[in-house]
Length: 321
Image 1 (cartoon, one colour):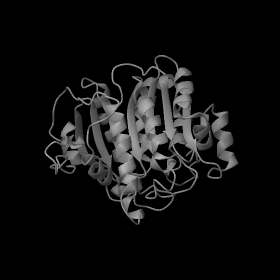
Image 2 (cartoon, rainbow, N blue to C red; image 1 turned 30 degrees about the horizontal axis):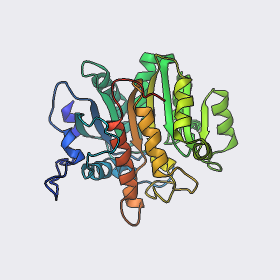
Image 3 (cartoon, rainbow, N blue to C red; image 1 turned 90 degrees about the horizontal axis):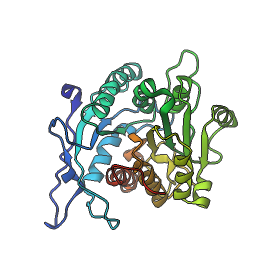
Image 4 (cartoon, rainbow, N blue to C red; image 1 turned 135 degrees about the vertical axis):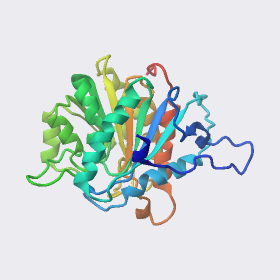
């Protein structure tokens, strides 16, 4: 499988201060057989983007920002994690049809690595949100009624694919539902960003819909407590993080930045609490488009923070809520 990947950046950024322990020290790019906790893979593809393109540059930007993070936390969470970065999956430019076929073929391999003898969690770095369908599909195929897909997003992404057209970044969760997904949860939804037709479709499909306003009012912990307690004990959770769930002030480098979204601390807490549940087996972080941010790298740094929250969340057991 190594020949399908381009090497990622050098995670081992030398610290300016010799006392600094950087996040990159947790990451290996050498092929190791077992004993790691997470597999990272990048999908530099935005050929299915509905809006402005640029998410193809997301994987590199997220890694670059993450490599500079320090591993110290004040919650004394366990940072003794081993992360294996496969690199970026080689995709055929912006040829959407061929790219989807290749992602389909690869996702089954990544799924097998993550859930097989290695027993690692998979983290995909996007890329546009169309990759989520392909990456979650193997879990849906094998676990059917047990799978729960949680989407942190400003939008529902349950658009129907027009006849004769290819699926796009707004269709992933409609496709999963049409293929048998029984439990879809969307958190951080923004008013005035989704048409009533799609809201009605999601509700008829039994989706749990949580607006950004509800997160503000109740707080992330109460929202996650309610959702996790509603799931069956043997559920498997796939967490998809669309960075446009965050407010435009903290995530301007996305296809459709809009006001009224989550602030960084809301997003980090949601990710941390869901990732800490042992039933959460795979993740993606998508829609980071660094070239669409005119000044700085706030969006990539926010996504890197989400990656760090996933890696440092309490392992081996459900978080007590």
